[in-house]
Length: 292
Image (cartoon, rainbow, N blue to C red; front, side, top):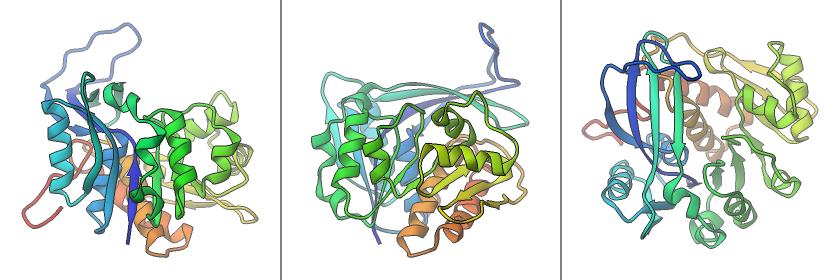
């Protein structure tokens, strides 16, 4: 079983707030804690919590923050030999405001070393030989395209943050995993529709291939060629923090696909894992003795 994630690693600053700020508004946080983050690293951590054989490819700064991010992933059983320290550039960072009561968040990212990932960084055995390669858009697009070209296994792309996707990249993607706002942006719509058939139509405007649209507390919508859209509902849980839930979904989805699950079954596993991930604070499950 092999899942390789090529993507970002960040140091997160997490600030709980009574409510999220509006444009130009200042709110006072309750506290501030630091933790590991980055969409790519979060996805790798989630996958490693479900299966062995997970690798991470990316860059951190040659600094203490970068060393902490690498050590944290390694402690979860992730192969971090493909994570390169980058002198002269800080490790990526993100500030995450989390609204108490709802768990909704607002995130601002400074890419740092993530912006230095090159095609050569991802044209490596961990990508070429993986059963599933998971990509996002927090590293430069040329590196994402190179990883998709190098992969011999399934390619899963989480197009976040959204940007126009070259046709050549989409042609190499086996499963596209946007959230509802990302699929609307990629399709040129102002906002996502509530109706699942209309949302599926937007997904099919982006790519004719399989799309899984994540819908937060509503679950996920599976859109496959030649099949009716299937809504996979999410279980009801006591939400603490939604930070990283989408990343957990992607990691769990790739583990299930690598194990041979059909896409709808893989989505059911991923929805359950993502829902559970909202029941603890921060982007990753707290580590426990004997558990990654």
